[in-house]
Image (cartoon, rainbow, N blue to C red; front, side, top):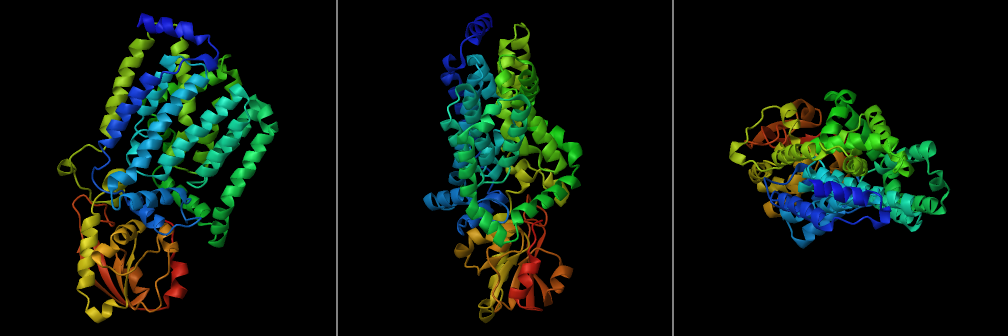
Length: 507
């Protein structure tokens, strides 16, 4: 322990650009993290959103109702390289997560952090039950979080070097992130407020910053045109998310869940980082970052956003906390850090999808499944496909020519759509989320196999509704892959071209 403390003392006064990079140690942390993620990539099945990304990727567009085009494009690429591979689909998530671990350590180095500070930052990132474990599946937040980390590093490096090319690169990454989801503007607004309060105000006078803003706007125009042409569904989705969050506590649970997402050791460094950014003279040029998590928390609590929306800023704040931790002369540091890290590692291992399917208990209610959606949202897709296929094959052959399948949930529709040709199913539709914008059932479709849904709602659309099948998976998500009725619906009361636009829903 003494040698580490002495090393910190020798390194702490070096200029930031002369701080040694703890490549071997950070590489070891990244390697262990990669092994942990790779070991879980093939576990269970596709998450419902992953199936949706594949479906969306097969219909590439400049915009979608609920996201940008980047993640569907990634899903399409992996689907072309290794069709139907769950592991291949998730490889990009692993890569960006491991890259974020390296970049988080580099942020500590930009702050003047020693090797120990870099190692602690990488450890905190790698032991977060959200930041690391999200890398086990392809998701918009996985890509978005990693891009926030990269943008933070570029901005922090600009503060130290004043190299304007860094601002242009930060704008390019921001433009890419706008093709994932529209959260990064919250980051830049919070940064602007922090800079106006604490400086460096020179940032706002740099031509490169405004050139970068123009790049972002230009890159986002195609998506904006798509959204405007479809009545801005991505913005309207915010109200849906707010309602969902409000139903589970919303503003009252946001902060505890957001802190929990940082992990045990990560949360300690998070609080230490905020305190350090406001108090440390050595980090005074970066003081504006101290306001960043506070402003983001306020913004997302007011709008009832999801607790992990601000997680992209954690790497920078934890890096500041790690610098402070290693610069302290207190002898208790190693004795506190060791058990905290050990407990954090145990928490991450517990969070990884390692449990055997045979030992997982089923759930009976959608509310109960929603608390573990990342688990139960991966089961039952094959049972759903087989039940739908059986119902379709039971139809008289002449009727199949005028039959389509409509799924009540976009997850169900995506699961059926990605394997439609293998099962020989007709065209798949759903009025739910982004899938509703993929196409309208033809007016010639007089018979519909409706997967899921409520009988009373269906009778308002069709003249005849009859249950003809049932999908049920032991570990399925209730009403999605468990206890799902498949209905035969005949004679729509109105033409689909007239009915469909009013049926679209984002909930």
